[in-house]
Length: 126
Picture 1 (cartoon, rainbow, N blue to C red):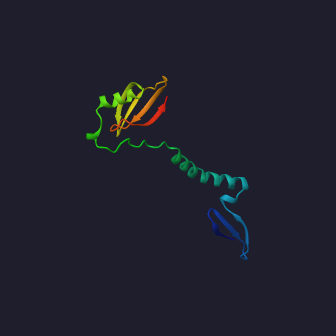
Picture 2: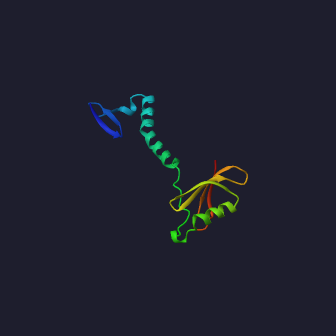
Picture 3: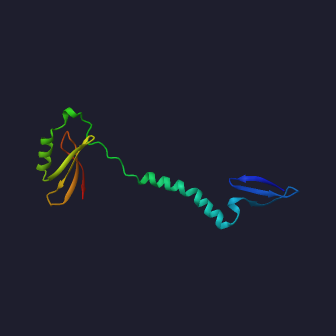
């Protein structure tokens, strides 16, 4: 009796006269076991794909303008205040200025501001 490979994880037993019997192998041991093994083989691939799609996007830069064209901190912050925001703190992060404070309604906000134009690129309510 010899085993003939017919697929991944699957062999077919052949009798002495060359007739084939039922497939045997780890995936055909029992129907429940075969399904579970296929799930265990596929699950890491599915989880890896889901993790790639679930990752938060990297924030894009607010401006491509060179630093020489950026507004001064005082000019930028006075523009943001003129728009009705009260400021708590700010910092430069890559090509953006991130500002935390409150809007006209008193709700806490985080702003991403273009340092060259003082245009608000993103508003996140906290």
